Amino acid sequence: MAEPTTALKDKAACGTKPAPPCTLVIFGAGGDLTKRLLMPSLYNLAGAGLLSEGFSILGIDHNDGTDESLRENLTRTLEAFSKDPTSEFHADHIDPTSWGFIRDRLHYLKGDFEKPETYEAVKQRVTGSAVFYCAVAARFFGTIVDGLGQAGLLKQEGDSFRRVVIEKPFGSDLDSARALNARILKQGDESQFYRIDHFLGKETVQSIMAFRFANGLLEPVWRREYIDSIQITAAETVGVEERGGFYEPTGALRDMVPNHMFQLLCMVGMEPPNSFDAEAVRTEKAKLAEAVRPIPPEDAVRGQYSAGTSEGRDVPAYRDEPHVSKDSVTETYIALKLHIENWRWAGVPFYIRTGKRMTGRRTEIAILFKPAPFKMFEDTPTADLGPTVMRILIDPDHGVSTEFNVKVPGPQMKIGRVRSGFRYKDFFADRPNVGYETLLYDCMTGDATLFQRADNIEAGWAAVEPLLKGWPQAEVAFYPAGSAGPKEADDLLARDGRHWLGLDGQTD
Ligand code: BG6
Image (cartoon, rainbow, N blue to C red; front, side, top):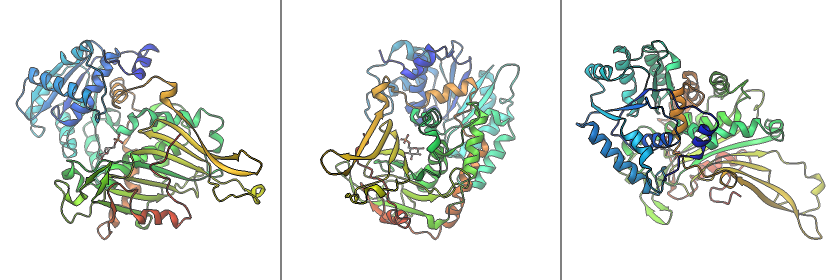
């Protein structure tokens, strides 16, 4: 039997109750997100006993279909993903009880998201509490929320709730994000909107708060007096794949920075919230994001991959990928420096980089501590002395790794560098969750801690606004696929007397 994730079992074992009965209405039931992430997550939630008997799913899409065809399609794709080593979902086989629970509750409605009849039809099918999930292209977010609101589907009566989950990208700049917030908030209250960022579904991201605030050793030194700089990296080896149509007008900055990278930034930089209450946490995150000094274009480097070698095979240039223009200047890589203007972080540079087709897959936050004075080592070969570096490993490794200096055994006082690490899997049972389980469960139970409030989203866009505005003239720097990024990104740090940490080194 495919085991439900340990995290979810823990939730069930420590008295976490099944989510209250509700209908999950999925706009985009035939799409990739539904197949790849939502269904495996629901399967895991069912296996952990965290869905109630009164749970059901209504899938909506524009193709012809029936309840039975939806059930067959999703059963097939779930099985295929469970065997695909590149998918997020791993299971030896599909447990018939857990999947049966979901399968029997799947229903289909053919509908055009732009037509009011669709929402009237939804109204006939949904009573009581509902979560409306926009698993669709971003251009439909506003349309769907308008449709729901105008049909009266967002009215909450008695104890029942009506919530809307909105995927990213939420807007494409500050103005469009503001406009989308204003548009949806005409149809419902802020508390009904759950803006998702799947990085917050990652256990390793959620655990940053515990790491920082539950350890007396770390909490006092997590500040400008002791920290020299912070590097946040999300390096991918994959290219743009089949997503050229989406990626061309989007690029790495919009795709990754004001959302995913800022989530990591907020987690590592925010002040301790007064409690784990959603508003307390989201207020601290908003304060941090609002303290980011708008980033000038000269503090950023945009790169694009040219042809190269990735994981042992020749791969084409971005410009030769499907649905990409031959003279595209869309960036597939971005590196930037930012400053947080508050008491804790004044003067500490945060360096952020993210890119596709890089030499290694690595998402991590590295804290580089200030050097010790080293006076007493004046007469020793200190050339190798580096700062103490603590890396919070998010993907694909999950853990923490610290590099520091020790004495090399022997008669002389020689300093050597060592690494000490911990991996979650060495201490806790493996957790094959696909990353949406907690987010779905939290939405059904009304816990918005891991979702973005309107001000969180707008603060992210505001910080990168000068880059977006400065871009039409900006050049794109090329880097060979399979490399660590463009040389210009190295120059960005060299200007400050620093360098990027390697992407392919060992971490523990
Ligand atoms: C998505 C981006 O939101 O996040 C993708 O659109 C990117 O371009 C992905 O590849 C990265 O997520 P993860 O969880 O694989 O690191």
